[in-house]
Length: 297
Image (cartoon, rainbow, N blue to C red; front, side, top):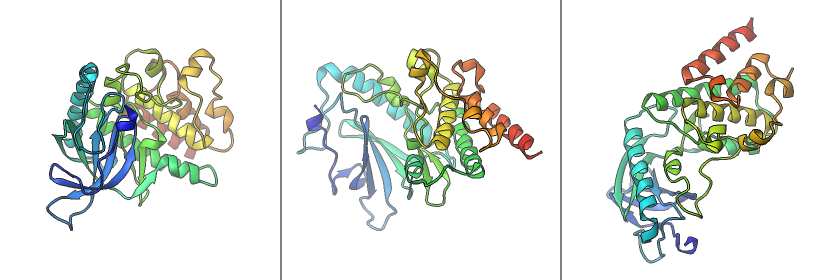
């Protein structure tokens, strides 16, 4: 079916918007740069289209998705989750969370309209960096990420896919949480051909082995992101750690290069047992604040 997974082309109208070009694609969606169809001078926006590649097709000659009968149950479960997530995010207004401006159904699928921001992902930043980050920069960055994540959790949502590729750094350096993973989670095991439901290296152990997902799961991912910033690469996955935990502790690996307090906080987030991690974003914020104060004394 992948041969028929065509993105919408520039000039296509969808709802009240006109597509300008494709920005990004993945196993579950396309993201487009678009503009209000009635106002050529309107500020460009981003539109995310629900399109699980293993469950639907779209020939080049049409805008409408076709879902084979055998895939319809899974497709519409994911569609419902995608739409519900859009409604929840539309109520959430926070400087460090992607802003959903509108959501609607068309072409037998659903779309989220988001504010378009200039910038690049943290993943891109790490790939381009010539040296490991300064501790002050790292602390300030993740202090903002945690503020956004706390707002997400306060609305009854989990991100479920926190990773450097989903932390978007605006042109002013402020981080923005993007690309939530709840819809992909709803499609877990739905069909062959779908990309991984979790991201190895950043997904928590409970993503891999089953078990209750909660704020502690996103907290593991935050710890993995901070570890990745120091390492300059993806950490050992939780799946591999479940077989044999060969991940060196941050406290041992970077002793003397970063404060012991920061490294201890990272290691706490990366505990394999969910109960041994901070249980809420507030608890992690307090831990980092206490460690920051201790390091300064």
